[in-house]
Image (tube, rainbow, N blue to C red; front, side):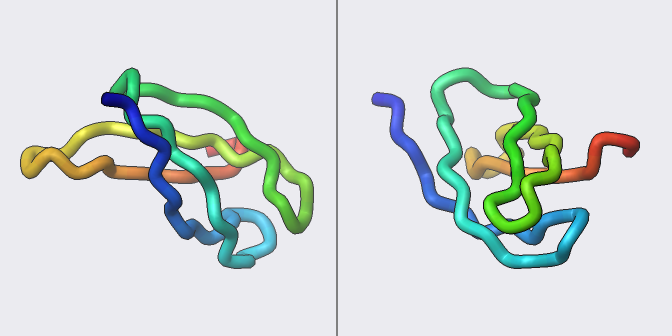
Length: 63
């Protein structure tokens, strides 16, 4: 069963802590979502680690 998980991340541009919903249905995956505060594009990279937890890495578009 696929679920959405709420995660808190820090925007790589403005540094604000924001809540995002992570879809665990298709891992690994990468996508872009705009920051809710500064509206800049955040690159998301999702993987499953060895213990079965979702690893969420974020970066700005030039990284």
